Image (tube, rainbow, N blue to C red; front, side, top):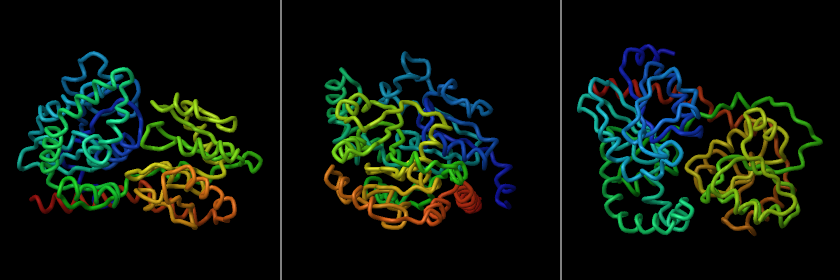
Length: 378
């Protein structure tokens, strides 16, 4: 690819909010390193035991790294992260890409350095998800204190976050949904480049028809993902649902789950493949920025039942690769599942749709975009 030659001589830094566990954002960084293998990484905290995929890279962490519980409870230091990212020195870099859903876009770069923010979302707990975080901050017995601190500081935090979003030279959003939020909260326009999905990993998996009697949810068990709707809906319908993943919602979900709900706490890569290959359909009831797991499910040839708003509507085609439910309610999801039961799908069309969000496509689009912006900067 011609653009790789043009990028090879650049001194590049990739900045990520935190690196403590493997998720969609960390996989984006991993893909970017295929474009910029020479890049150094900067982050607030880094747990190398959990993220061995970056062991060949130079990873620079902030002063927060040395603080108690920083690797296990980095959320405790969210109000220090602005200072942490502002303290990094990017002198001498030609290009800095911040991959961010929180504070990493607030880095300060020299005027001659091109800073591109690849935005997963405007910071949820300041903007679109503020009320959700007030209801469930995720600090257990310290929730009342967390709520008080957030209420008392939200004005100042939003002011900093808005100012931080003005610092990048360019913003690229991961979906049209995020681009809309970027315009609403940050008053900035942004190009959309969909994130990479390793579709090849899930295409062509062998499945057993005898096992295709369950619905599947796979991912972090966090409140805004609304896994509770799927648990209640499948319990009501008496349908088998596998909930694969872990997170702060697990205990509450187990309490409302009926006998047809099965939990798998930390599926391995192979287990995840088998779960995709042998499910009837994937359920995705949250309002998401993009949503990698629905694309993985489609790459395995499986339809997706998803909420009719947010990033999933940019990947799942209603009636072709899945079924939408119009409201985030048990009743609406039950109706969608019942509709799915009566609908036929073409596996080849589902896989074809998933391929539109492959890693190769991401690298071509991002590489070409960076080359163009570097040329303009010169």
